[in-house]
Each structure stands twice: as structure tokens, then as C-alpha cells.
Image (cartoon, rainbow, N blue to C red; front, side, top):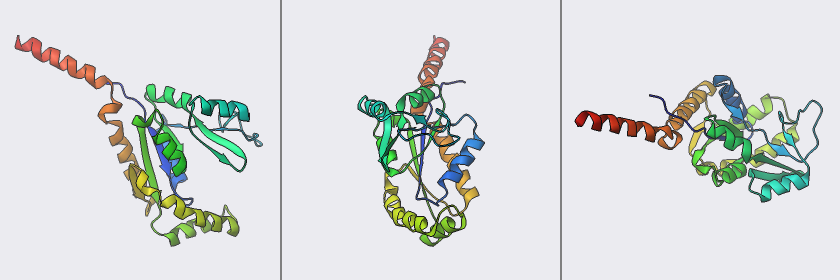
Length: 215
């Protein structure tokens, strides 16, 4: 049996340090058909950034026009620059049967879940095993100053407080275990009836075959 499959919009959210980025990287390595959503931004490219690979760079007027035309699945103003997820490439990907991975906060996740593509959204929130462990991870990864770590810790509860707006919640107490559970969730969601439009035609074929044998 062969059936067509629509792609999923896979949203991963978490407070900084809970392991979301590592899980996203593992997912991309596990399934090379996964596409990572390339955001649009009005900020200028940084050294080494390539348009269409790291971001879609645009001017503010173009960005706002896309928002007004409903061509952004989600968008936000961050430190004076706009960021958003263009709907066109995502729509094309899911119709072609490819899953698209989003690394967004709860506000972006909420916007995507309320978009025209909401029927294909799979949202997953990643929780740390404890606040103490969350701080330890932020400190040991060595990427941020003490001031930035404190800022991230203050923001963490605002992120965590929106955990109940997601389809699934994973407590990332063990990275390998969490990754296995994440793969199980995605595998199951790919088999949902609404993600397999070819099933209707297949069942009709079975019906015709059955009725033909009965006559």
C-alpha cells in the first residue's frame, strides 16, 4: 500500500538551556528530509550569513507587506528588528510531504497554531528536570556572561508558564531518552489520518475490490 503524506510543522519550544537546540540538531541528523524553517528578518546580514540559508533578509516595508497579506506564519519585533516565518515555503514543503522544523518561543508557537496551516502543526515543549539543573546547564555551556545568564533565568519562568499550550511536553532529564521519545511522537503524528490524504482513495479501491468479488 502506498499513500501520500502531508508534512508536519514541528514546533520545538523551551526555556534557554533546556536542550531544545540539541534535540533539534539531532532530529535533523536523524532524518535528512526534515527542513529547518528559514526566518525572514529586517536586520542587516552579519559576516558570513547567506541570504536564503541563514535568513531571508528584507526591508521593513516588504516585511510588513507580507504580514498584512497573511504571508507570515508568525512574526515579532526583537530589539528593533522584525523576525518572522514566511508561509509560502512552509506550505510548499508540507504539500510535498516534507516536515518543517521550527525553533520558536511560545508566542511564535501560538501564532503558528492559529495560522491557516494549524491542522498540520505538532507542538512540543521541552522542560528542564529542575530550575537548578537549568541554571547549571546555562553556566557550564560557557556561551553567556553572568548577566546574560541571569536575564535568561528571569525569562525562563515566563516560557515555562506556557507549557500547557502544547500538544506534547517532554521533561529533558536524559538527552538520549528524550530524543527517543521525540522520535516516537513524530513517527506517530506522521501516521495521523489527516496527514495521509491518499488513504481515502486506497479505501475506495478496497471497497471496489470487495464489491467486485461479492457480485
